[in-house]
Amino acid sequence: MATTSSQSSLEAELTVLGNRAETEIAQAASLEDLEQLRVAYLGKKGQISKVLGGMGKLSAEERPRVGALANTVKTAFQSQLDDRKAALQTAAIEAQLAAETLDVTMPGVYRPQGRVHPINSIIDQLTEIFVGLGYTVASGPEIESDYYNFEALNFLPDHPARDMQDTLYLPNGDLLRTHTSNTQIRYMQDHEPPLRVLATGRCYRRDTVDATHAAVFHQIEFFAVDKGITFTDLRGTIRALIDELFGEIPIRFRPSFFPFTEPSAEVDVEWKGRWLEVLGCGMIDPNVMKSVGYDPEVYTGFAAGLGVERLAMVQHEIDDIRRLYSSDLRFLQQF
Ligand code: DAH
Image (cartoon, rainbow, N blue to C red; front, side):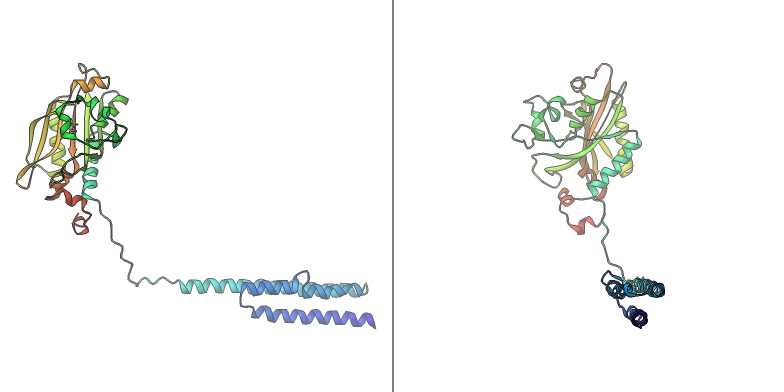
């Protein structure tokens, strides 16, 4: 009697538990709810485990029946749980998709497009021209020693040529380079001719700022060394790059002096009805050749330094160099 009653009461309990679990699973609103249910029913101290704890009192014939029922209930519970979980996950994804629908008719967010600054644009154009002519791009430091900026370029310590390029000195005697010609020495020291090199960068001078002078400005230096290079090669190269940049505008070569070239010239181009100097150039001085260990009896070369700001002013008919640095968007957006 007692055996029969505990068997039937266990079976009844399991059936009730199974039904209740099914209802609760169906009502679970979230993955957390489901997890709680799993623990409440199937966990070590869960309700199903509790019921099964009573199985020890069952007889040998009854035990398999109850065990089989318990397994059926457990399996059903697990698969209901899995189904509900999948349904909740699908619903969550669908809700997210619905919330994040892309409305392609919505007006976009306006982001102003950046432009290339006229200074960078000149540098890019010239780099392209020179790379097309077979030049190698090099660079040098803005903080430079007196040796590379002046001495190796044949500036004697007290020569008045230094006055044209007064600069700012650091306490250790180094200086802010006054031109990109320092790259000539650095490059030639490390390489053997023949060579064709282009170097771009910022330069500094203790200059009074006006419409055509800035204390910080950019130069492009180019130079070539080989056997048999002449002034004609220099002239042809300059004419070619001016043509490429501006079309066939009038230019003039004016005799000049630089310690590191002999002969030397400056080149002016027509700008707003007057001549504007845009570059210095010349045949590399034999003393410079010697300072880097080249034999001036074997090799000759030309060199030039172009003022990037000046070129930008000619290209865009800009009337004042200071506009290039004013960061005025009304000005910059024109380019
Ligand atoms: N470095 C000169 C300057 O800043 C420009 C210059 C002149 C560069 C002659 C050269 C050169 O390479 O050969 O005024």
